[in-house]
Length: 225
Image (cartoon, rainbow, N blue to C red; front, side, top):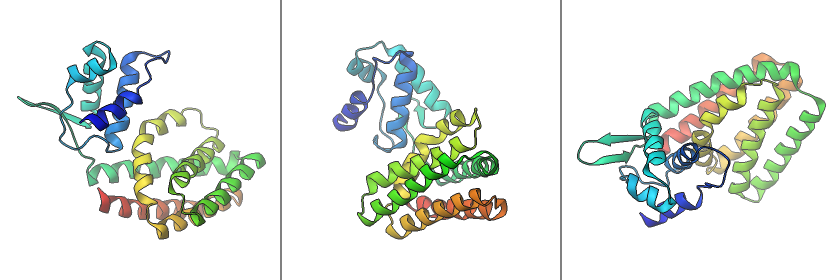
């Protein structure tokens, strides 16, 4: 337990000007989705609170929210334990992402600026360079940046908060997906084609590319879950 509990404590910044419950919730959610805490592991409220030097109430509130999100479960006479991410979860999350990204594509076609096109092109070129160097950690960051640049280009104001709720899941899936070198370069090429479709205002090919991009990722990730 010590290693992942230490990681949780070290990554929980209680100096933020935010409610402690929110900080604890986000930190716990991140270690749960990343797979840092083993499936079936007990989460002992008192121990977590003691390590953070806080009352048990914020931890209890965070666990209730995580239980509502199906990331932990309460088992009588055992307590709160971690749950695995199932294949059904993977498919559901990707279907939500597909719907959002098609909407983003349609609005980005109208709203993207020349400056944003330049930034996204730079991201793709850097992703190709990092792929050649087999630098997976940097590619994960660049893929996340690519998505946020596309999201930003849509100029949709509520979208970031919707994506943020999925982002911790997507980070885990993205890390799994791009471990495969063949899939990695395919994804980079798909990013380039998505940008090309936005620039050329080719909605139909753009939607087709997004669906292919996500379907291949689903197949890779679901085999690893």
